[in-house]
Image 1 (spheres, rainbow, N blue to C red):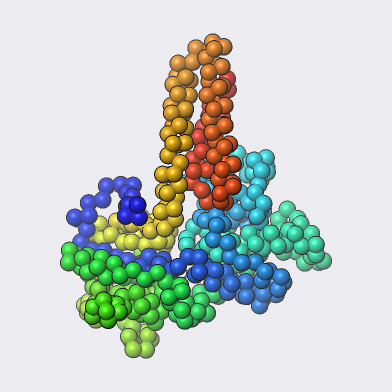
Image 2 (cartoon, rainbow, N blue to C red; image 1 turned 180 degrees about the vertical axis):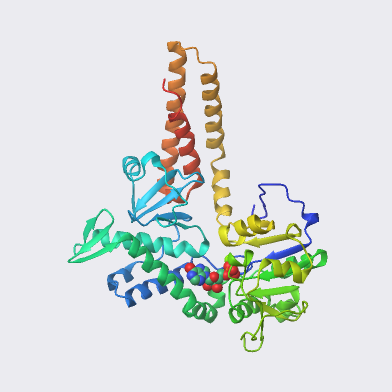
Length: 428
Ligand code: IMP
Ligand code: MG
């Protein structure tokens, strides 16, 4: 059901006095894959502009490609890495790395995720087209006869293109697409195509405002925020009288520069709502309802609204910029928007029987180990249970391979981890 909310700690909603929202991919849900396909096209054009071969324009965005990955700029691999740094799966372009390849690239199948010079974490929704583009470029250059494949990149005459420089170009193109305004312009040209409009937003915010304060803190600029929010909160005449979107918030802050916003922040300025320009000087006065602010910091939000960190529930889509930093540095309560969970829970539900069977077999295995007496009969039962788990795993993997891309499938991981547990058990 789409109405589920998951918690990983106790959250007493009754104690929340203030609700904060991020905008992009939170209040403003971009239509997938139309929006990512647009970003992908703009990225390709950007790369061609800086000298990449026009042949790359033949790639089109594939929404079934894995999400939330790490790019290893040394070897050009995209990796699915768990919280502890264990490499679960990997691809080079569109080719899956074999178990042996993973072991040879990554001893112990482990990577130091905090080595940010080498491992770039691509775990936000804005990263979706970027991830796919990395795979496309590796696929393109690996298969192009003009380039020689090397361990850490490609050789073309006396030119060497490392995976690191390739990733840098993709990142720069991404910044350019966002900062030049071309993406925003195209989005605003056809909002029906790129934005999900949900009339329940106004109901939710209206109800939140009855029990506490509501604010918006977005990294987007005022002009873009205004255009998007006007669209989202605009109700057709048939549905009732439209209320200005700003009236749903007690405080609006744009250009927040999260995560820096949750630490030292930047200068707090007032926005001229007619021109979108910033007023000169730092804003020092008390909070005024009709004012839109730019920059500032989370401390200023608390001060202007008269609340403390633990009174706030902040809702965002960016694990690092919205959630981790607001929680760790400011003790805000946080809520992460994870759209793909909807699909993934469907898969869990669909595969419930397999999951139950795996759980049963694992419990059985644990029980057998606990009472292992070294007899040959005991060892036989253990081996046959492990074999059963393996067969179950293999048929699930096969089924997933037929149905979809395995890197994005949670069932695949859980089955693999069950299998790994059984493999890493004491030798029999
Ligand atoms: P928020 O999610 O509402 O805080 O705002 C996200 C803003 O960050 C949007 O204006 C995006 O255009 C911008 N953005 C997202 N990813 C990138 C990037 O990789 N480089 C530069 N800007 C980005
Ligand atoms: Mg966001």
